[in-house]
Length: 223
Image (cartoon, rainbow, N blue to C red; front, side, top):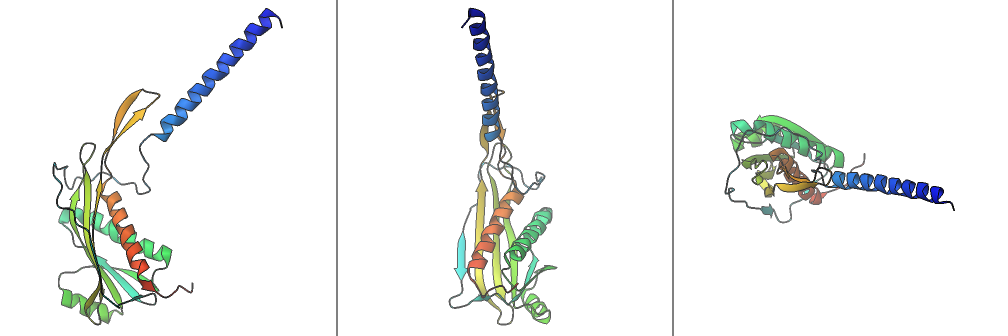
């Protein structure tokens, strides 16, 4: 092999190595960028970050020997919340409603555009409108942590039989999300990844609620 040809092949090999390094760095950078949540929401100005989060509790109560039947007509009432959290409350009801429809958890599921203020009146309204089960809920705490603090979403739900006026299932759930640190290999610097937004945590709470309710529902979809 001539000296000239040997030098050309060396230069070509170095060029390929350089291209591979650049492509590899680019792939590594993409893999450590911030997560892309399925639920894309604008940051809430509802609650500012706090140094100490409100108490976070989780509890489940299921009435013994009581079953949630697939053939039920279910009404999901608007969640109680502070005035500034109404958008998040509406989102959470929509999200739970969508999960029930996708999973065919019940025969009929409807959103009820009413907030529960009087439980007895709500029972009467539900019976008159043919609901076998109703779901009522309330947002307890919301904290938007941003890039420096933790975010929190706390909510409580009840599944009620309006005919017998008894609670069949009680679900108190709290979700917390931490901010993270990312690192870009291309730019060779760190960057902040904000903690999950309250609506993203709300979606997680509703998914767990749908999982719990679905696991205690008997009967099969025929559709």
